Image 1 (cartoon, helix red, strand yellow):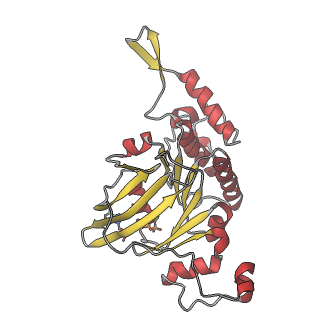
Image 2 (tube, protein in one colour; image 1 turned 180 degrees about the horizontal axis):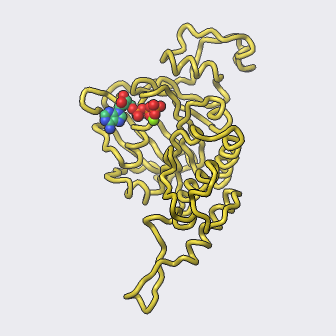
Image 3 (cartoon, protein in one colour; image 1 turned 90 degrees about the vertical axis):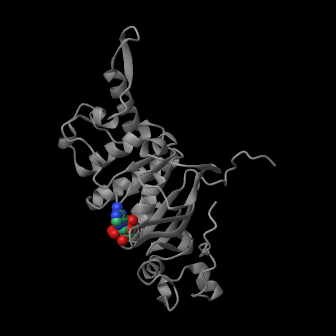
Length: 290
Ligand SMILES: Nc1ncnc2c1ncn2[C@@H]1O[C@H](COP(=O)(O)OP(=O)(O)OP(=O)(O)O)[C@@H](O)[C@H]1O
Ligand SMILES: [Mg+2]
């Protein structure tokens, strides 16, 4: 055996993450792992701790306790820049774009490629390269947008594509989207689902936080359900129904859950069980994070 990462080594593994803000326990020992290229939905009601967990992963917050591993190796993210350089990109809810700047400038904001003007002493921004790279990432996402257009002239869906393109341009291994469809129309949501599929085809892992279960079931391979700072269930999407997940989100457990017959997956109907969920893993309760 070697220590080389195998196909099943998680790209990212968060283990026993705890975070308090004053009297609020936002995360009480949360563990999730995301495989390379996987689309993972992080579900849960308001204040469950989803955004806080992602802020720990992106170096915005430091955990009080717990570990982060990438490709099996322990890592720390003292700042968002360090997390980014490890290949983790966050697409914010408001997309955090500069309205008055054009698409290519937004994609490279703060990380503009430079070229020598007169030898290495005088360097200027390489706009040609920015334009080329912008066209390349938008093409990879199959979204035609003129790189010279000002962002304020774009639709919600196009703005989102620019935000995702920004992540792609820097060879992200994991893209995190926090409520990406909150402000989008139905057609735009369909487009996002398509874009997420493209990211999967490109081998890029995605963590999507959403309140919309239909969307989670449309795009994700697996999910974790959080409630009051804890993970209360982890599933493969084909092992669970929307109404079970909805119950878990609101009640924190599937005890007392009664499925309507049509809601029971074929597999489970056959074995005649509606109450055994062997796929719910136990959340570690001890503070044994390394
Ligand atoms: N910077 C902060 N200071 C104090 N409390 C915070 C801070 N950030 C988050 N919290 C608290 O931590 C808890 C979890 O918040 P978080 O934003 O992670 O929830 P969420 O699952 O993302 O919710 P939503 O679905 O509403 O976005 C909440 O009780 C929230 O008030
Ligand atoms: Mg949130």
